[in-house]
Structures are given as C-alpha cells and as structure tokens.
Image (cartoon, rainbow, N blue to C red):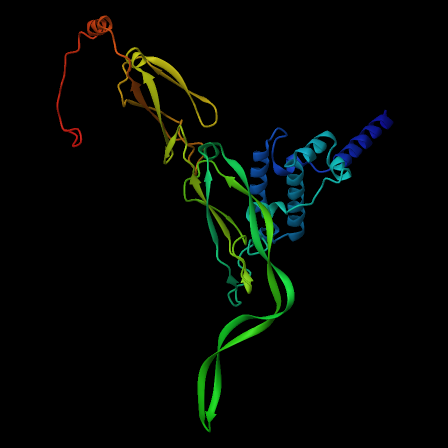
Length: 358
C-alpha cells in the first residue's frame, strides 16, 4: 500500500516537471482565451512586472518578466500553442519553437532601453532627443466597440557603427583669453568631443497597437524610441493618434451612436418590427405599434459605445426613421380608399417659414 502511494507521488512529480511552466496561469487567462485576450493580458502585466519598475528585488522581477515573455511567445503563436496544449513546455522546446524574433515588450511599447524605467539622467547634462513622429491611425467603429490589436510594420532608422570618427556632443563653453598685460576677455567657444562615426540603417519593426474599448479621436498610443534618431542622443517617440474611420451604418457622437432606418409607408402607418445588427454582431430589436412620421427618432439605452474610462457604461443608440413613399402613380380607386381610411384627417395646407423655425 505504501509503495503504491509512493509511486503515485513520484508520477505526479514527474508529470509536473514534464509539464513545465503554466503559461496560462502566468498570463492570468483561461485556456479558451483568444489572441486578443492573450495580447491584452501580456501588455497589462508587462508594464507591471518590468524589472525597471521593480528594483526592490531585481532577480525575482527579471525571472517573472522572462516567464511572462516565454508565455506570450508560446501562446500568441498558433503552432506553438497547439504543441504546448498537447504536451507542455517540453514539447515546444524539443521542436525548437521557443524564442527568436523581436522582443515582445518592444513590439508593444517600443525600445524600452530608452527611459522606460524613469529618468536615469538626473543630475547629468540633458540628453538630446530626436523628434517625435506623429501619425494618424484610422480604426473602425467595430474595433473601438469591442477592442482589438492592430499589427503595423514600421521602418525605423537605426544608428550603426561606421568607419572613422566625428565631432559630437558639441556645446558652447565660456573661455577666458588674455588680450594683453592685465587685459582679459570672456567669450563663448564651441567645444566638441571626438566620437566613433555612425550611419543610419533602416530596420523593419513589427509593432502591436492596442485599440482599447471606447477610445476617442485624438487619443495616442506611444512607442518609446521609435521616432526620429539623434546622432548625439536618444531617438524620439512614435505617437499613433487614433482617428475613427467613416462607417456606413453608424455615426459616433461622444459615447452615443446614431443611425437611420428607412421604412415603407405601410409600416409607418401600421407599425413594424425589425432588428438592427450592432457593431459586435448582436441584434437590437425594435418594435413600433404606432404611427411613425418621417424624422421620428427613438433611443435605445445602453446600445451606444462603451465609455473609455469605464467599459461597463454604454451610451445611447439613436434611431431616426425615414419613410419611403410610393413612387408609382396610384389609381383613382386606391386614392378613394385612402381618403376613406384617413377620413378623420382634414387638409392642413399650412404655409410657414421653415428655415426660421416658424
């Protein structure tokens, strides 16, 4: 009996070793998580666990950060994830599928070697910085409603060593010159250091841009050190400014959505029932059992856009109705029947200044 229990514990121990790290647990996600959920989890945890922000215990922080990177690289790749789900981390390692490619953190935040952990130049001469690159990124209403990750390819000029030397870190310094016995003059003079020469080489970078739910036009996603280079300092940043692409069905105003529906004259008079397909595919059901006039508007609470600060809050959906009148000529008999049906309505024929609102 004791032998069986011992063997059971040994088998369980071997199983744990073979399984390796629990990448789903490291990312804090379910095994059914989709690619966007994996990316979102990594992006959130990477900012929290980066060693530059956890300097109290650098060894622990570095180990956690490496585990996080390994988990993301495995689960974000469909082939590696399939291997991992089948037989754990050991299978991924055996197939040679682990590692390689651009560092995942850099693809979400830029070159974090430049100032991610805060200002490391305090007390020193200010470091020159290249210009920021500001670009508009047009995204769909669907992406702003549900959230998404957009992969963009960025050609970044990178400084590489070259032959020879160059003048660098040039600055103006005050020097004293003797003009004669007892006569001195203070003047400014350009002083430069001698540095190894460099050249610019274009490198292709793949960046992951998170489109967060409810983002509004003008909000920016910043990628550190992915902007213009500076030969004597650090590169600038890449700033991607969110812009909403025009949509064929919905128009956004703040957190509210607006749309128009054209109905027939018969439905306008007798009532109708219809479904509007929303941005994420769910149906918004509308029932009208009374007369709907041209320009009539209804609102559906909670069917607008998610609020950027609180994704649990949603704006309104405003639906304006257009009525399509018959274009064909009506027969005398049909006209007479209509007059009989609408006999309670008298001719109005009101003339007024509509442009002034009278």
